[in-house]
Length: 290
Image 1 (cartoon, rainbow, N blue to C red):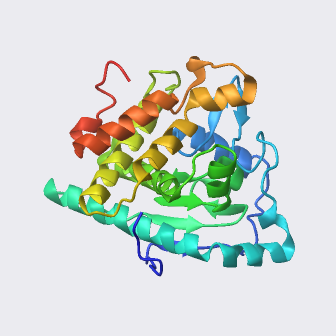
Image 2 (image 1 turned 45 degrees about the vertical axis):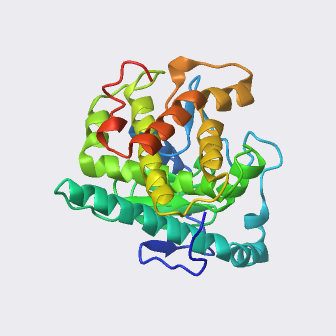
């Protein structure tokens, strides 16, 4: 992807190097935060057989990255990640500029989200955020949260390589922000139990994939894409499909516990946004087949 490698964004908040959030792993900390994510169905967490499974930071995948856990290693990692920070900042601004145009074309105003870079754990409007959950959007404070170590896990552990795989992740999370602005996520939250292969949670996530595809279409139209970029995004969408993650973790697939959709569904809806470029085409809630 072609981008300004010195880009900075007023909507990016860099907390890397700060002390990790210490507000406990008890009822007011992580145990509060994870159910909130599951209830709102944001982030890269899946609920499988009553247990919360993490597919980042090596919790289930062997050889998880420890670079950010070693005293001075935090500072060294932050320096090494500088080019990534400029890339994240560029994609953040580009995605939001694209949505500003989409909203304006429909006579509406787009309100910017913020994106927080952090190391290990951080405070959020939804409780304490932990890198083990992967990137996530918190609707309470309208912030996207990313530990850059996830991008290495995405490439090395899940096999989704390339910068546009990372761009897809950012665009997907900002798709959840669009859903909040449009009132979609509030409607899903009111539904209560939304799990399952055709449940509202899966439909919400697939819609965010479709919204990421809408942005990808705009980059194609502006000649920002390079060879292999779309394949890279499709590879990332497939890599985080519920079926693929479940099979890697347990050797079995349980559609009744899905929250994000299968690999095939996630790539299909990303492609639908890419090909249509319109919000109505991303109405996963009206679709009879996902």
